[in-house]
Figure 1 (cartoon, rainbow, N blue to C red):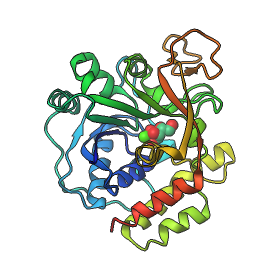
Figure 2: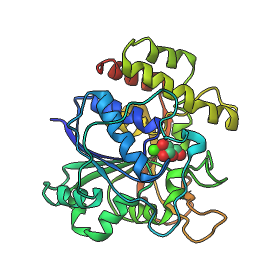
Figure 3: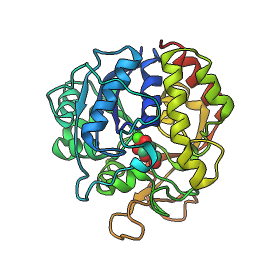
Amino acid sequence: MARNIIIDTDPGQDDAVAILLALASPELNVLGITAVAGNVPLELTQKNARIICELAGFPGMLVFAGCDRPLNRPLVTAEHVHGKTGLDGPQMATPTMPLQDQHAVDWIIDTLRAAPENSITICALGPLSNIATAMQRAPDIKPAISEIVLMGGGFFEGGNITPTAEFNIYVDPHAADIVFKSGLPLTVMPLDVTHKALTNKARVDAFRALETIVGHMTAEWTDFFERFDKEKYGSKGAPLHDPTVIAYLIEPNLFSGRHINVEIETQSELTMGMTVADWWGVTDRAPNCTFMGGLDTDRFFKLITERLARLK
Ligand code: RIB
Ligand code: CA
């Protein structure tokens, strides 16, 4: 029985690979894709989500536009990483599939209200504005959520948008605070694990060797996306952050982590959006998430490449 998931996303090249992986995997049933402002503004993230669905051969996928800004802070975007369009690298066609009229938050609420208990997994690949707004507006939706798996935060790796904060959490720290205090089963893919998901020439060549449009686009996106991290970290390749969320649902044993307490800094500007992870258990704060740190990188890329091969 396929797992029902909702993908909340701010595409972004790495979001794109995550969405392609999900659509190519029969273990997952993507109920819909909800766009949020993040890497680029909402009008681009919703457009990019539709581009990716059409590329994957899913023009009937339900795509919704959600929050165009964080709960209590001005929007911060990341064109310096993802380019002006958010999917810079290859030339992209204009999408022809429709954007749904309903607001993403209303659709999330309606979908969860109509669903059985513990029946839908939320995959959050961007700032948590949509998810937190839905929870605040309709607390009764929580029982339908079996798990939230999100890319965000960092502890040993520090931050990537400030010295202490990772982008998704930094953009909407108040939304993250709501999600981390929700009491729901939470699995977190922080920079500690995504910085082990680095592309390299052989891995990108394997995408290209698929000799499909999807393989070509994925290679072009990762080539574009890696230049920032190579410059900033001197790393050999780009961290494929968001596909870790989807890969976890398909092959959880690719990952290892700890069930710990993580709280979100929402007061100090100096450390705003920091995921304060009690990795060493030095407080009496109750564990609230599984915070990942280990990854079998070769098997991770093997899974992505194998699954992308199923798309044309
Ligand atoms: O910090 C990395 C995260 O921020 C990824 O989800 C990337 O797509 C951006 O949203
Ligand atoms: Ca993202």
